[in-house]
Length: 104
Image (tube, rainbow, N blue to C red; front, side, top):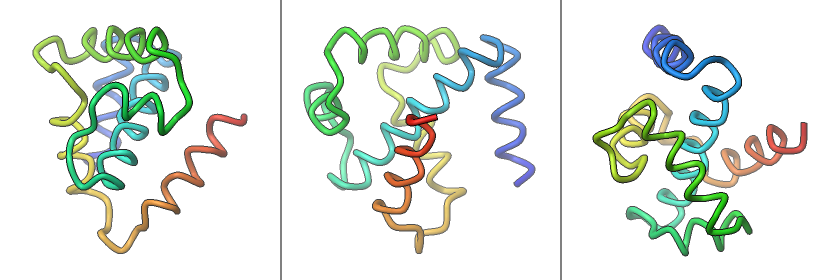
């Protein structure tokens, strides 16, 4: 729990609360697709899964790079996050949680 709190603090210090939530949501969305595919997704696969436009994806990547400029994708950050998430947590559970976040 402590390390995930540190991640939230780190991200919000970099880009603020509003954009921090967007960055962390993007990482979680990325992770859901990566878990489903069992590999790093391509941007078209990410867009197809979430039914988002290419432009939305690249805006999210641009924001992600404000926090982690060296990353070409969120995979490195997701790998760390996933190491903190219990393996018993199903992809469907994560996707349901993300749907609730996106609806609010």
